[in-house]
Length: 110
Length: 120
Image (cartoon, rainbow over all chains, first blue to last red; front, side, top):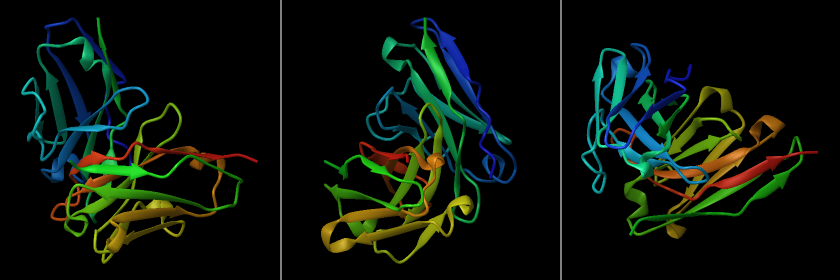
């Protein structure tokens, strides 16, 4: 499968909101409600932020929200903080019990 | 608390095989699966495959089929990933992640990663 399409980078100032898009096809993002989002700081393992399109695991602040429209999923981070600066990855079920990741988006907090 | 502890870094020659282990604690191992994800230097995440905790079911990325072997040892609460016929393109950090067995997509806890370097 081809990787999902994410912007290479986004940026925002502290307190602002940013949205990261994740575009796939009807065979992955558009076909299922199984989209996850991960945050990865340099040198660290990924951390689950969102699963099932818009559900937050326990401990993830509600500043992180997500949705899906058609074949595009979106992650919104509100009230940006310096610690939010990281790489963000989307991931979708792609049928036949396989998963596909997005290429990643680097968030810079100005 | 849920923890996944991975084995240490490996250096392998092209054509060799590597085996990475992932020791789980803090939950009932057989109730969850384990996914394997890798990340080449400076690159994004790549899903490799998934195995159920009871070792009964596996799924793997098509491009790795034939080279990737995933197993679990329920008695030891451990998962193992073996990758054969290594090339330099397999140089990456390899992660294991606890994964639900219903949807097989929710990777909620991750190991610290294991660096595998393939070099002659």
